[in-house]
Length: 115
Image 1 (cartoon, rainbow, N blue to C red):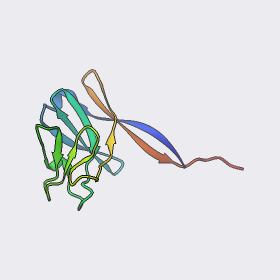
Image 2 (image 1 turned 90 degrees about the vertical axis):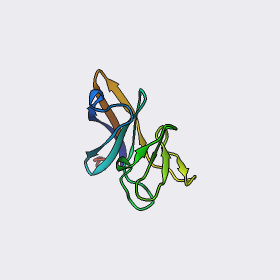
Image 3 (image 1 turned 135 degrees about the horizontal axis):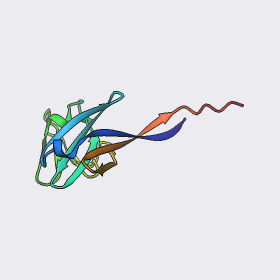
Image 4 (image 1 turned 30 degrees about the horizontal axis):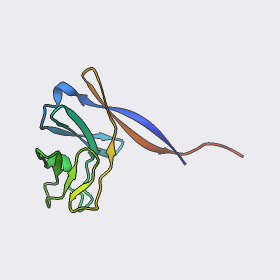
């Protein structure tokens, strides 16, 4: 197995006002794309506690997102758990080109080398 990256167009910047987020789906991977001030972040949408959608939660002024089910809280910038500490959700690189927001995902691909 080797890893490859794929860029996925998430949405347009003009469709994502500051303080808002949206959940996108790329091949059964759900990703929360959020805008905090002028920054845009992307994290895995699934809370590691019991699977709640982080995109259905709320963002704080401190740059975190809170799961609506049980209040688990993660930093948008790096996915680190604020409460509880020591837990992390995956983050994804974000690129903005003009009005388009792209998220880059690493995907495992099978190597097709033959002996």
